[in-house]
Image: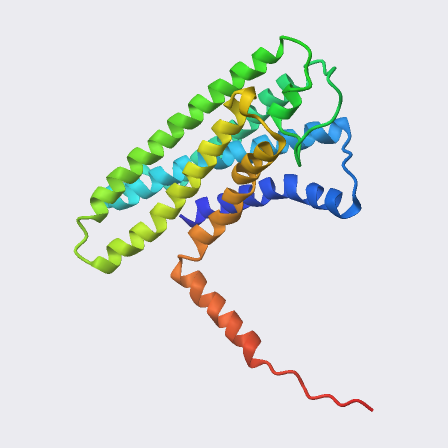
Length: 261
């Protein structure tokens, strides 16, 4: 579990660092410019981190399923080498997905200006600037990616249904509450991510508006990476105990008195 959490933390940090610092700098300095190469790099890294994170969350749901529903077979089904291979597959698949999307998107001729109504370089906003029917190729790739993401989400739901069935057989009410309090927030965040991402990428142009596009992009690009550490870390008793200990140390140190002369 901690090995997967380490990978998830790195992906969350990467996805947040790809979009928010540039958006905050633009807001502070009242500058909305970004070069063509930097826009391509931002799109690639964002697609890479987000895709790899979603694949990793799918693997983590399977890890929880095996740990709770088949605990005696955990060492056989998910050894340390298997976990490394699965995490590497998530990173590699995310890299390939990002490479395909970036190459397809930036191979299109752009003739509708150079203004993106978004706080980062997002594929739907770039496709709006295209004047070629070749954008259908990228749109088809988006549909395939959405289909794969929906399959991953369905796999998560099935895994958690089996987990909940096993949890309901736990005689301790405290044990059931602990399992539900961890699994349900994670499933809610994943549902928020995939629903807003699908709507942002596949919504009809007739209901598109700058404010709606900005809200949807914020919900799927910022909220899940920001909330995941709270769901996975702050539910852990060891981490909570360490945090309380550190806060206790800080509060016990008193500032020395001072006088003005």
